[in-house]
Image (tube, rainbow, N blue to C red; front, side, top):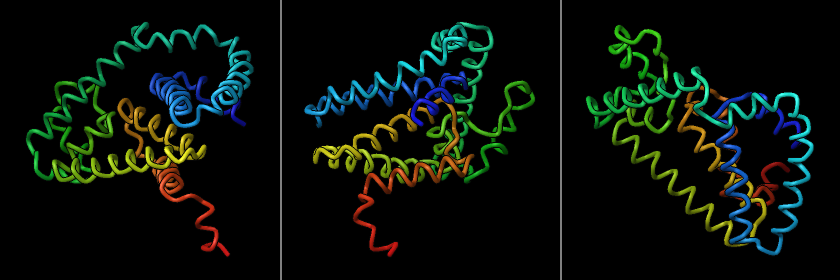
Amino acid sequence: MEILMLVAILVSFSRGAYIALFVFFAMLITFFCIYKRDMLKKALAICLCVWLPTLLCMLPERKSVLITCFMNHTVSQQRSTAGRFVKWKEAINIFGLFPATGVGGGNYALASDTYRQERQGLFTSYATNTYLQVAAEKGIVGVIVYGALVLSLIYIGIHQMKKGELRSIVFFSILLALGVREVTFSSFFQKENMMILCFLIMVSLVQPLEDNYELFK
């Protein structure tokens, strides 16, 4: 299953997905070094066993994978990167116009429409960055609320990992990877399945599943 998931991510040829994948494994190994050193060798062995067959499966597409890893190699990648920077600047400008409460949830497309005439080819209904979209739509109030949520999750994640829980290390690494991905592609508020996945991981990180068995009896 893990191999199929990795292959699915790699064949997407999404630079954001590649970065998130790297962050996940980098954080996973780092947290094992810090909080679960006795299982580090086992974790490395499992990663190796998962990655070797994955890379073998990707051999026919190795050229496309390498191009994606270069991040800014092709003209299309360069245009995509430039377009993202334009949208980020646009979101910052909208935040500057409505700093207190933003333009309202889901109204980013309406606010960004004022920039559409001069850059029709770059128009999208979202900011391609969840954090900047929160700032543009919800202003300082939203930044404080969502910022407090993120900081709380970081605090809880570190606290749970200090207990040496394997589950917490894996879930917290996934959350960090998803958080990094939201910098390059804002899918949290656009896709319900993404939101549900994040909430399930958050709940599992905050409250161990075995503590909630009584709810399902």
